[in-house]
Length: 133
Image (tube, rainbow, N blue to C red; front, side, top):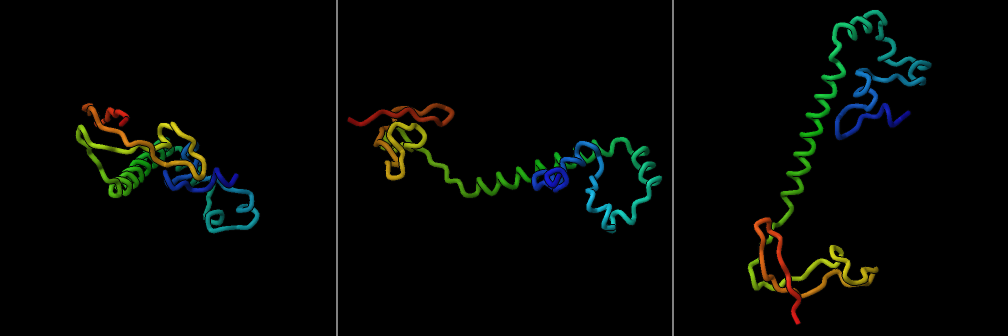
């Protein structure tokens, strides 16, 4: 039950509120009165739910906006630390062994393989490599 009523960082909402449009009340809150339970008025709550049928949809839209903002913030953080590298034809480069898995990558295995020579560049910045002999 805890995962249903816990606010998620990505959306800022609980999964229960995104599905049903209202917050869940756990049994422990009913037995031990909290501020939320003491301020609950049944007729007023039903009236609010009837007058605003799009409440759940608004919650979902706000969660989607929150999720997009969070994703932009993470992307900005990541892009700030990435160094773009460009290579020219005839440059010598090393290739990451984990990407190709050409050699055994055990604990003490090699992390890089090569050297390779860049023999072509596509318009998508993919490099064509040739082994040096």
